[in-house]
Image 1: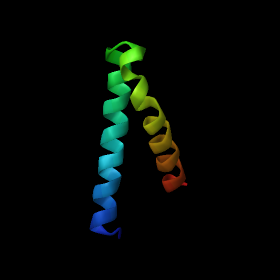
Image 2: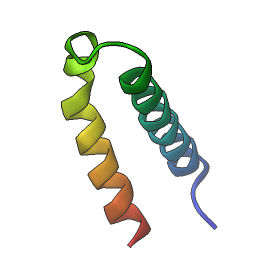
Image 3: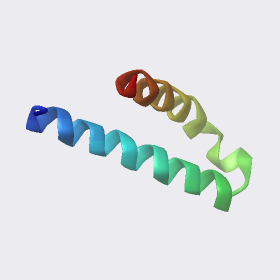
Image 4: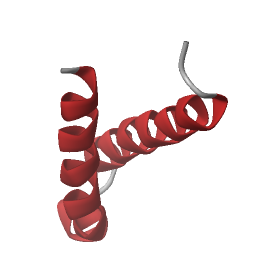
Amino acid sequence: MTDPAEAISLLVVVEFVVMAAILLLLVPFEVAAPVVPLLLFFVVVLHLYRS
């Protein structure tokens, strides 16, 4: 079983990734551009966590 702090951290990262993806779909790219590097980093982290 995972540590509760680890589970909460994972939920926060997943929430950020989902919200950033929705943001990229709804607003122009120029507005959402500052979020893209952190989004890519968190996607890689989630991928590494799952593998």
